[in-house]
Length: 281
Image (tube, rainbow, N blue to C red; front, top):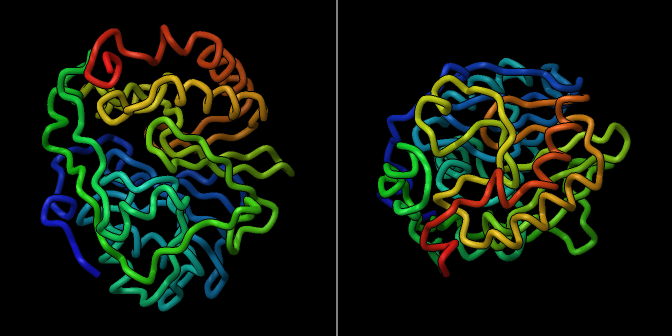
């Protein structure tokens, strides 16, 4: 496995939610690492099988591992790691976790594999985009790929999710080429990565306080706004009852229904910036 010196660099950003876990269902546990959420799928209990969705910020492996051990016991690595996408704040601890846990398979959309095998870098973040202080600081955020070699596997074309029965993956591009969300029809639970978020991710104060409001994907790292809007429409049409987002607090019920409907209907006003290199292009 090959690291990138920039993707493993600690990012000195945090929020009041860091270190807080919220159980949204008996087998769905959202855990905040600085400014981003990871998800533990599995019924809590020593020795139980489980899956990790996304891998947090750089230097957070010990934090993620300690929380996993509280829920599933020591010496019990996940059956798999599923990535919604491979931006730095969703794969930051991945190599460290793989070194600790051994050859755990990592699954992502085939369009994301070049970013996990050292073959392609993301576009650089857009510091010129309309937005707050985080957008202006985004030049600090890594866009380089990592290389996890044979640990990387494409998700199946039949949309099943390894070791997550009853779940399907949905291609929700826009924020990245191979961005996916996960959906379970039984209870309409959804894990959406950054397809939409519940905090305005470009404003430093709101990121720190985790002020709850629905928004589109982070502006400084979203190159395709038309496709991002289509992805939100696809997710809204599924009528989720629970949504765990990559940034912000997980949401459910009437608040989720009303606000996701509003976001889908008014995406250009709420989410799309007035200017920025990706908008202009």
